[in-house]
Length: 360
Length: 40
Image (cartoon, rainbow over all chains, first blue to last red; front, side, top):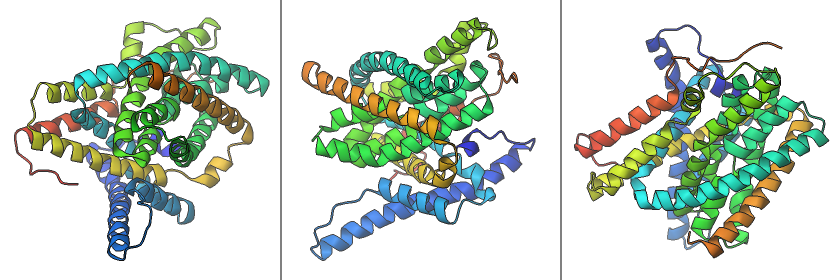
């Protein structure tokens, strides 16, 4: 659940905290590996029996197994700290994924993503604020929803909450709405992408620009194809890189209204909010480009990245508790949902345009 | 309204740093052939 991701550890020694992570991490491994085994076994069985059956990726199996466990048996407290590490594995996986990109490709696709992100951000932030006003949501809750749906989901909400001095309750509402919408995106985006016959690059770019949470964007991309997953991560990483600027803008806005503390050193603020894994991703991509790694080593790094993502996808399912999400009230969810549909359509239009007028 | 603002000069290391460090360490081990080839 979202609360597990933001829970602050009690005063425990490093060793105790590390030991507390083990049960949940083993659960991530078990769920993720089960997904992989089911995919391989189903494919082998249907092939040997000449049965026509669509290949269901391990990504979907891992998420569904996690969802079933979380929403039937529930996740006992002992597993919570380890399950919350799925974001850690996501970031390590993104850094290692840098080995599959030449720096020139990163700059090319990243540049296009940046252009589209800037355009989409401006429109989506404006739209979310108009929507929040129409639904009479509290202004800071609207700000959190706008940041969450425009930039990078839960991480952006967590980054913005202290900076704009928002209530815990508002942050919980916004996080719940974004998580619920992320879960819906996971299943709808691949269906829409296939229905529109989007290319891997166009679909990956769309997913990276429109799906809020990095974990869900990565999973929704991988559900389409391996190549789409790669592009989705790159586009999402570009979007994530802007988090500091948006949060800084909101902090200055609320501070100017006397409803949040003053922002001191802006450069330090930006560095503090900047997702450091973006730098790791660029470094590995640079090393891969200059030939630092041999071909078999690049293959090992790509596989390590897949293993890290496997744990992430298991965590996405395990932390989504539909009953808890339903308890959070319909208004933030409605504003988030309408905003998401707007952002999905807007970014789809942008990707179509980019596919026609720019070389993806 | 409760003031929950986190000081910008906070010195705690973010989990991001550990994730990046682990990934870079793994890349170095792979580069130096200190771990066997990783299969999928």
